[in-house]
Length: 391
Image 1 (spheres, rainbow, N blue to C red):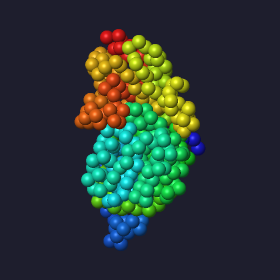
Image 2 (cartoon, one colour):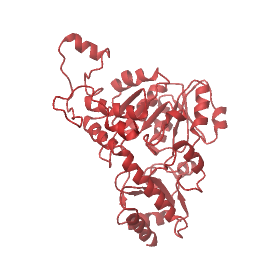
Image 3 (cartoon, one colour):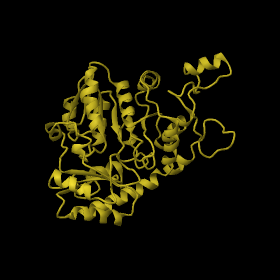
Image 4 (cartoon, helix red, strand yellow):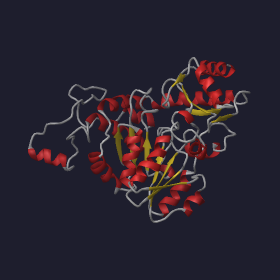
């Protein structure tokens, strides 16, 4: 079956007495068992049955199963946010004295997690240019426990050669972890590129118009020793499991993901092309443009799809602020891949607590505006952007 069909035909784990077509929301903390022995089996993971909704809930399990069906993963674990998914997975892989190799071009909170939070617990991160596989190979030591990357960085729009990085880590018996949020897993196979673990902020495309927060860890089973840590240690001891309400909304969002994404990505490409050469814009940064330095690599890895986010550079920060303030249709808000188009100035918001020197080091420019493209009519969006540029 094709991807969208798979998302619609995932079977319930148990028969619904009313024949509901949508998985109900199981709004409960605990579950009753017929016998003490049944309860013991559930709590010791000898049977697949929910025992407490902090670690297992039927509505969340159904959402996890749908993601697993689409991706072909061995295991999927849902969390309350994308950052929850990232933190729980890295805490399952890393330990004191180990090293993570990553790029300095990361989402602000992910960078802070690696650079500050995990560092306090004795986990070192080496930030390298992941577009240079030979440099990565030179820095592999016995202490390295994984390579972590974003498939398309935000907001730099950098794309690394995933296959080349996968070859390096697998030669050394360590996993490749990729945040694949920027282009959804319905559009290409990260597994076929050599990714061992995907982390996705399901708040973005999957939630269906920013209805809820969420994140998933998609485990392809190539490092089976990690899943028990994630499921039986991190989830129990750290928490962060997705709520049943969020799982219900994101299950519905997953059903329309491919249709919505196709429209958003098509509109993003149309707008990016229309803005090329505008006298007020210094640069349009989008991997779907044929003159983008990552265009060929991105097409090879992700197919004929380039995501629904692009950036524009204006002459100054003041110009960026005036532009954003002049928008009438586009919303001034954070998040990505809402049904509505959003504009934000990353340097003063997402990276607002970084020093100017830190922002320069990770290539976050004060001239950059990030545009997340929604479902509005492309002509209406272009008209709004042009009038704001003219002002």
